[in-house]
Length: 388
Image (cartoon, rainbow, N blue to C red; front, side):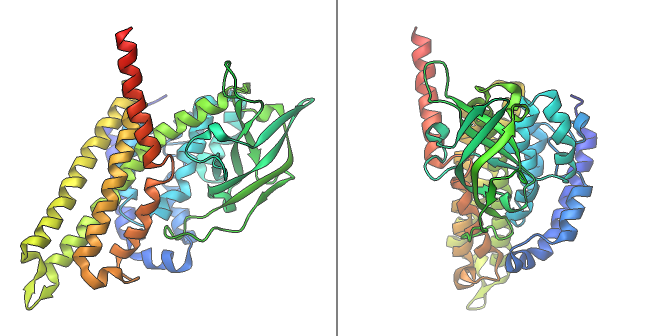
């Protein structure tokens, strides 16, 4: 895979930085009020290659690696998180399943259209009884001749209302010593029996659409089985999620940076008794805690991405980065509301939107609790192996 040179990437990053700050930030209120990303912003994002920045160049993407991906995520986090969500599944959890596990035929059928934004791919894993841990998966796929028949229900599926393809996880048998029994299928959204529910009403992240997806006797050919292997599903899910966790960590840092910037700007101009509130030491202490969290998070994300790309650590590091950075972003957003005082509780103020937006970051792509289990369990298992 051709790598993007640091010089070329810096140009890409600057374009994205400018797009976010000059085109998207001024329209955050519009995105929030209409619960949608304006068509012209979507078009600009597609023209810039943002629907396929992490898809290899041979399939029409920009071919960025994870160290470059996180630099863009730091930019995306600075504005309404719905913008990133619009193309996040194409580059991330859904697209990476195809990039890493798809057959050549599956890649040539889908990846170019995903990279261009002609097709939005959704990652259909989460179910009412199976969230951060897919071991509880209940959606079933049964072999019938040359076809598979899928039945089950998914929930909170990002981009479901606009998806053209569902990367769908289903159980082909019960888990046993030989494997998890979880396979993954490529299910076009217009396949008979696929039903997308009404758009969820969420606490925040207006403009990012999620919905239930129901599969009722959905019939797909054997060529829809990712990698042509029933055992691929669980590994594909875990691999895509681990990579996605580093991306979400960077996104959280970008959002925390915005919350910090809003806090500093407010503290420097708002007055109490004729004195700028930024002159008060307790306000300075809050800004100091915000700044420290942002700096630590950014350093952690960059180091984690580097170790992921080199292959040194693709499990514990991603979970540690997501855990720290999303919890940190929540604290920074909370402090931003505090610095703003009563105005920070008002709907027209960015600090209020950020406070609601970041709450989801500690839940999706594995809750903070799941990350703690991955980190702690991984460390103990490694220590036990060392003793043998």
